[in-house]
Image (cartoon, rainbow, N blue to C red; front, side):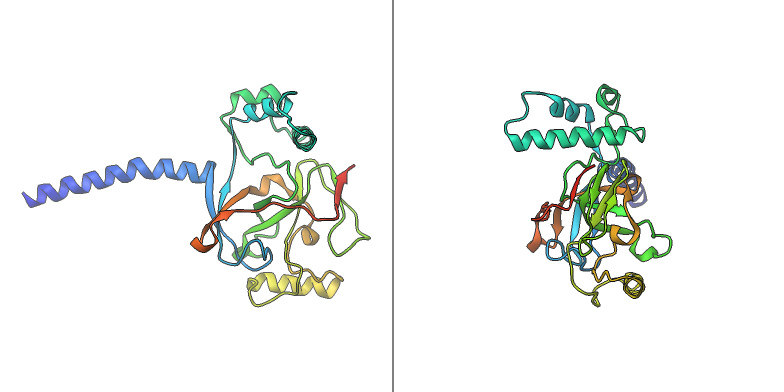
Length: 246
């Protein structure tokens, strides 16, 4: 009797796992996932150890298209500017084969999400991840959009053009490297300092250039751990603009 009861309990457990795990895996791979901040390159907005909820796709993208192209949807000059920027980014993305306009109707979701706002925080797979596998994913702030020209921080004589399907990303922290940084990132930062005058704390686009959107995992939306830091991930742009449309 006990054996039959144990067997029935095991079947129920396995059935529950079979019903829960695949959908959870699909959601994590497609829509939302968790990422942990490593290092202090994004301080003070994000701290070492923060766990972020990251949105990985646009759901029903044709609805966003209708909202951005609707003449009645803009309630202010600023809102109209955001809509125009979104449409410009979408047009840039379309040059790389991403669906645009009514072609989005057949899509339930699109990865990566459309990133049309300066100042948002993104998670992406580092272009040098194969060389530094312990820091495969990095968290940085968008400073330049595809099609823009960017003036990197700390080097006002340097001008960079961002390709259409790419982003220019930088860390917030502008201090010298510290023990908080990952060991591999410290070694790379040390090598950079020997060859350039860039003493930034962050390993970002100033090191390896624009980041292709194919490497982007998603947009960081909320801090969910630790509880004391629960809240929305802030987005902001420099007081002095450093990017403009070409």
